[in-house]
Image 1: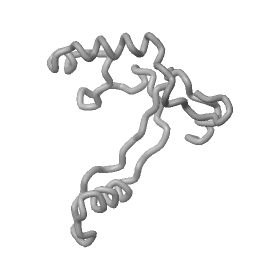
Image 2: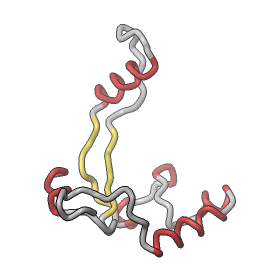
Image 3: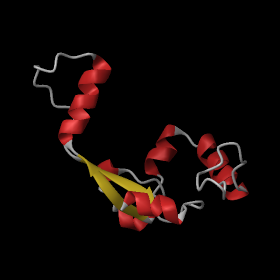
Image 4: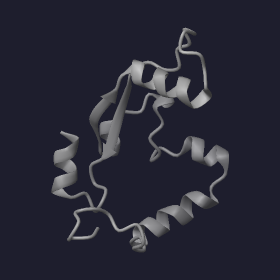
Length: 106
């Protein structure tokens, strides 16, 4: 993260532990990925708190539907529903989060 701007440095190399995790998961088969308990998968009724995740905000259904209509060039008069309200999570222990980033999310 750049100290001057308070933002992340997109060109900085990731720490070795991130590289190691990437290599590990890159080599796993689809079945192994599906069974990995370290992967937060909501369809398996996983608890985000078990994965050090924090709920930061919700995206209203109307926002999601509007974005889908615009993206897919649908007629807004059509009553398609794409998703219900969605909870957004953030990793508590992700290195590099600045205090200013945390304040923005509150």
